[in-house]
Length: 576
Image (cartoon, rainbow, N blue to C red):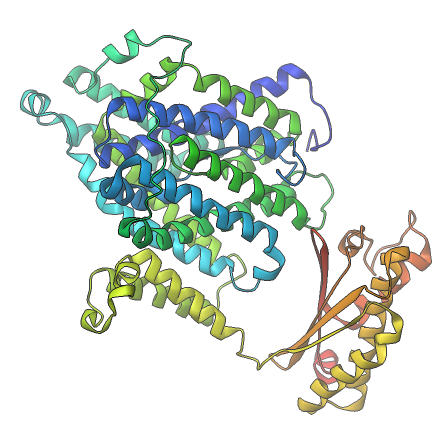
């Protein structure tokens, strides 16, 4: 790592890296609304306006991610761009009610993301990576027909003059992108989508599939024609039938941003740090603001682009200055009609092949997200059942006559149906080890007796011996002492502590929720390291706790911290 987030690289280097990252993502930012609006039958002027707003919103939110405003932004280099997850539902909305309906759906679903960002600590057990990854895969399956329909979509005169051109252009675009991903270096793979588009264009230009006049006539600087469609606030049947799908896709985009917010922290520092979930919440807030602005402005929602993580790893530059310059550059490009016209020149066969590879990568990304914590039989069942039941409902193969009218619109969408199955199954898995035992008490050492009594009852239910039971009680004593000590003088009689104990594979999983501590315990030297920079009494509690428990985690959110760990019985410790 050459430059960490709070360091300042030379201005020239920062501008050059920002320009490189913008070049990597601009095709995704622009072509996604082009795909949706073309499939939805929109006019060229409306497509141009949508591109303008997509670039402008992406620039604003990219700048905010790097330079937070209050709770808006992560404080890391997270480039934002148009979300491919909205392709299928976006086309449905355009066909049902035009851009006004699409804008209203995007606007109202963005409010859900604000709620999720604020309540992320509460939703952390329900909106899991497995649920998000499964929905991403379902999105890919739903978008495939759109990609296939674009492959042979060319004007009739061009089809008659060069019938071979659509097939050749699509095949070359697809082949270049896939080939570079298979055989190219890591740096080349980042550029593969753009190089694939250029290869396809080389076939389309001599075949007469490319209309160059809009590009030559476009000004270098200017504003597009005012074609804002407003918002459809009639809240008719189309709005209510599509809203669940938009809410689910918005939540999926939020889960993707959640993952990127964690990943960017892991690659941005020289020394490993505990994940700061307050930064993740900031990333979600900025993403939600981008969706809100997209709905108001008349374009598709945005999300974080995972290439941000790849380029930080490759260049070794995580300085916020790069993200700030990148955001400004995207805003400037929005005011260049030449840029929009250039990307609008790309014919549909090339766009279809590009989208086909994008869907494959989207499906793969969904699988990675779903299995990021490892593969288990439970996860396999959730993913498999959600995928195939979702498609079964969409194809009306699962007792359609038994589905009530009010649910037919929701379950007729495979993504909505599959996601509901995933959420239901994930909720059921929470009870696999039995119901959790909960207790709310004061954040003070005087609460220790009630905590230990609660833990003793759970240990006795598992038939633990006295030594193992005392181990749990000692662990709770050290954990409570840490919370009280690091909360310092901010505790009061009104300060609350929430405790949850559940059984998992013969062990006790304990979680304590309290006031924010300021310091993350996972960033303190572990019990196996010598601490030369911290007072011994400051570290002793953590060292003692580490010696008694497994999987000690400290997660920090706005307004609340969670300290969790697992305690195993004595015989399992002895075997280890």
